[in-house]
Length: 399
Image: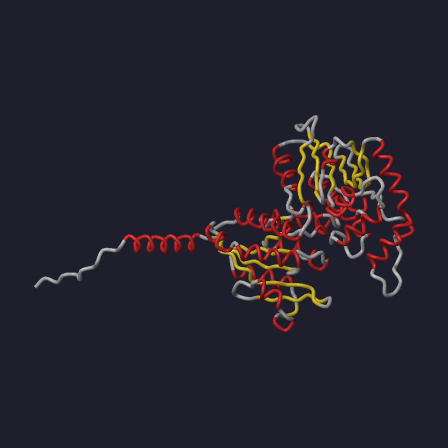
C-alpha cells in the first residue's frame, strides 16, 4: 500500500505575510553590522545621546545596524570607573549605577572588551577630562572608532593630535569630531568634505563659535549694561559656573585651532592671540567666602560697564554691531579671537538668540562666502550631532 503524506492546509494570506516578515527579519539580522558601543561620560550630553539611541533602536536595526551599548565609564570622586555588560546598558541603568555595580576604570581594558564583543567597536567621549583625552591615540591604534564633542584632543598638543591622525589612518578606525566646533552644525564636514576634498582652496574662515557669546551680543543693545546681559545669560543657563570661562575666549580659540589644522596649518592653542572680555583686574579675582562665584562676578563686572557701553554706542552710530569672533587667515597662517564690528547688513549681524555662524571664503565662493548658521549649543543638539557622526562611521564599517 502506498504511503501518502499527511494533508497540509494551505497557509492563509496573513500567515504567509507573517512568515515572510520573519524570514526578512532573520535575513537582516544575519546581514547586520554588529557594533559594540562604550560611552565615557553619561551626564547631560551623554544621557541625551543614550536616550536618542534607545528611542531609535528599531531604526538602527532596520538599517542593518546591530548596536549594543555594552560599556559606560565616568570619573567618580576623581577616579575612573566603568561598567561593562553583555547586554544594552539603558539610560536608567547608567543613571542609577553605583560604584559597587562596576569596577575601577581601565579605558584600555574597556576598548579590549568592546573589541571582543563585536567586529566593530565605538567609544563615545562626552567629557572634557584629560585622562580620557590621553586615550584617543590608544583606542584608534586598536581599531576602535572614537566619536566626541571633546575639543581638547583636536586643539591640544600638536604632537598628540598628529599621533591620533596617524593611528586612525593606520588602523582604519575613524575619529568623529564634527561636534567639537558647532555642536549639531555641519561645519567640520563642510570644510573637510565639501570644500577641501573637492579641491577648493580656503582663504579665510571667520565665525561666531560660542552660543553664549552669541547670545550676549545678540541681546546687548544701546542703553543696556553689559553686566545685566551677563546676568540674564546666567539665569537662562547659558554661562559656565565661572562666566570667565566663556568671556575669556579660550573655547572659541580651541575651535579656531581645530579648523586651522583641517586647513593644514600646524597651530598650537598658544599661537592664537585672544582679546579676552574679562578685565585684567578680574582675571585672577576670587569671590569672598560663601559667595556664589557667578553672582559675585556679575557684580564686579558692573564697574567695567562703561567701556562696553561706549563700544556699543560707537558701533551703533556707525550702523554696525559688535560680535565676538574667531578667524583664520589661511593665506597668511594667522589666527585670532576678538570682539569686532560688522555692518548691520553682514551675515553675522543677522544671528539670533544663541546662533553659531561660520563664513568660508574660498576660491570658489567669491565674492560672497559660504555661510553655515544655526543653533550651536544645547545638550540635545550636541547629542544629535554625535549620533549622526556615529551613524556615518558605522555606514562605512565592513559587514
